[in-house]
Image 1 (cartoon, rainbow, N blue to C red):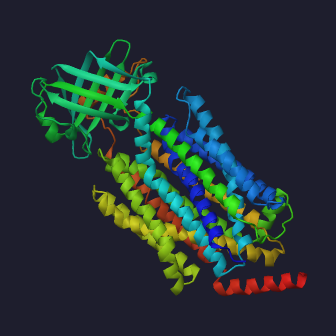
Image 2: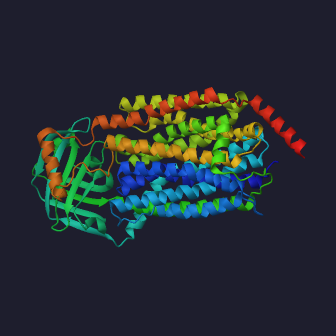
Image 3: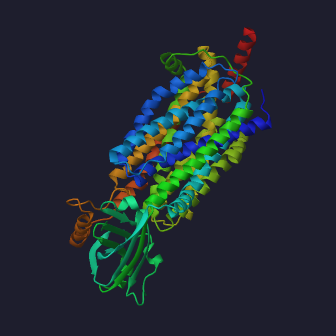
Length: 610
């Protein structure tokens, strides 16, 4: 039965809210807890994978519950409402972690709320996508409905990728500005070192100890001053000037916001002492005199990001609930096939008997793992590789282009390609487009491209492919429902779509674990200090670090670490996509002709049953 415009719009706006929430969690949960809240990358990777293992049992169970639900509002809408309400609440608390928690407490908090988020998201996601076969008869109508849902979901994902970082900063600054927990400390006992960097941003070993007057002000959250603490350029905003205070001549703020400039500072609030280390490229280093004074205003951005994510998430959670509420109100379950409740063992058995569903499950895991590996590492690529004072703006620009390209691909490219090719050939085109984009991205990164604009070229091929693949995997999975009805005499729509929810989250867990391992192995993280406390003193630790630079030019972030990041976010996704391509090509047989044959058989069987 065909849906009206009002119902289509209601279904679509639900997808927008649903994928806003999913993209926020999938793209920023690792960054939030690891870079902002200080949880170890390895610990976060383990937490995310444990949550996915838990989902292996939770998702099929939820599929069985949905399949057996019978109410006057239908089987899907009650769970859609309940799941959305609880997931919105859990989402807010997941990004509102109390900063007072210690390392183990913060890790436990992250684990509890991330697992709860997965459970409640499943309660909403399974009934949402299970509606697709219930609303449509198959074929082109089903493709149109799947495309609508995926297109609107792409809009939701694009909104989050475009606005999150800039919104977090804006909201965070507003929140910090009203906070009474921020204090300013003027350091009276401070040693200032300036270290020279080579072209690879590695210290050469040349260091100057400045003897001029110092004027240093540190502003941060009050809790950060309770013990010795450290700041670096990656978690701070600073204005730094060199020279005499009567004529601050040579340097401006812009001189210290360049791609290969770094600043570290360790302080002891108890006696207002500290050490400041500034790393400059050779040209700027040569301008500094050992008799210069320093004027520095430094403020931590950790609190800005923490509060920014907290209140931005609250906004997203409210929008999510409102959007799905619209879906629940205006969508009517016009066509639903009765599905008997099944035990978990029976459901897995039914899935294993549906070879086409299994082929798609494996394909979805591989395709989404490749995509999520890149999306998880992208923020680190812009922050630590391309870098620069405007890394957030460049990251937002790239995501804005990518989000728009995904929507463009779903709305325009897919319908155009569908006029000339069947869905299987479009799948092949999309996979090779993504692989080509990754190859171009790697070549550009390795050849030293440092402007965001050339990276839009590989971004075009990758994001366009992602947009089309998002539509195709849902179409293909919906097709396996009809196939299973013919083969197994059972229409396991909730079961199969519960597996879609699980495998997509499994892919995000795998990708997050890969990203976490990469960040640890390659030491790319602002949570991992370049120096450690010695005898409980961060000041001694930074002093030893400076001594090491003087002695042997100790590295800050090595060139090999940056290259490792580039390979993980490009070569590994290419390999995973290639495996997904061969799995799909060898196993999936539901061509357009085969689907027409299956649809006719279903109609005959239902007519005979009546």
